[in-house]
Length: 140
Image (cartoon, rainbow, N blue to C red; front, side, top):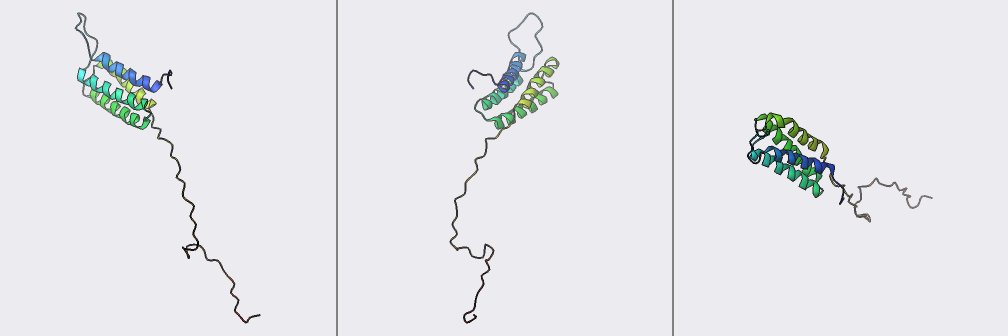
């Protein structure tokens, strides 16, 4: 809906923000904040953007798949030591929250209506036979 904020999309944007703020910036005279490689941050941010884009077009199943892939890549980056220890909890929490909130909701299935079939006796033997009393001629 225009004018309303989608909480799932906000979670995706939050994950992007964590990635972008952690990739470092201009040189500072004070020690830099905890950071991780720009390539890792850019990759995770791009994946988060893809989740948000899928949600924006209403493709929640694709968004859920992309969110799980983002979660796997985030865990891998943390386990490989490519994310500073001070950022691991914040990043993994944001990504985990995204995965929890994005659920696949396939479009409703429209039932197919079958055409009415008129048999006209073409398929004899497929229906239980009706019993007919046959009277022999001459019985009376």
